[in-house]
Image 1 (tube, rainbow, N blue to C red):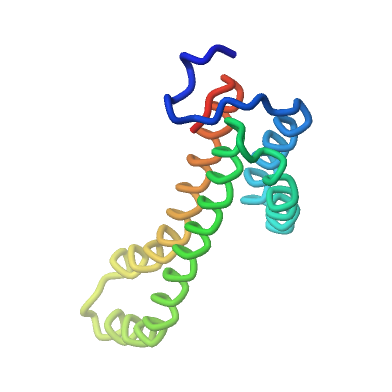
Image 2: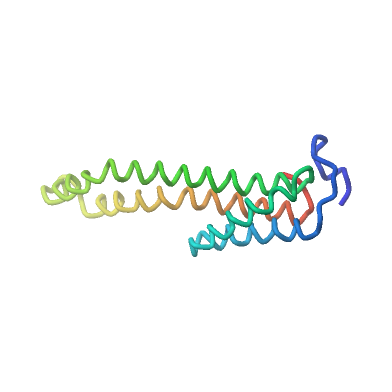
Length: 143
């Protein structure tokens, strides 16, 4: 690990190898948690318990990135759910429009795919953030 790979304002303290291992483990649990949600709680707990050990090292940015990405994704999902709940009455309207011939069944299918895409977008954002962070960690770089 050379100092040229770190930003000028990055902390210079050397982290313990176990702290790096915990950062990597957290990334793994966060990524796996997208497919098995209870693992997100394990990842969040590990992150919160071990982030103090990374204070003053280049690994601090990784623990911060994990937590920030998780909270931002949670906020985005909450907004999507709120929007979908507020639009839930439109399903009846959509059915009436299809029944009246105003919409074709293909248009109705497109409207059904929109909520699915709206829920998947924050998850994809989260996966990209975790994968890019893990990649930087493997290169021993601060984020």
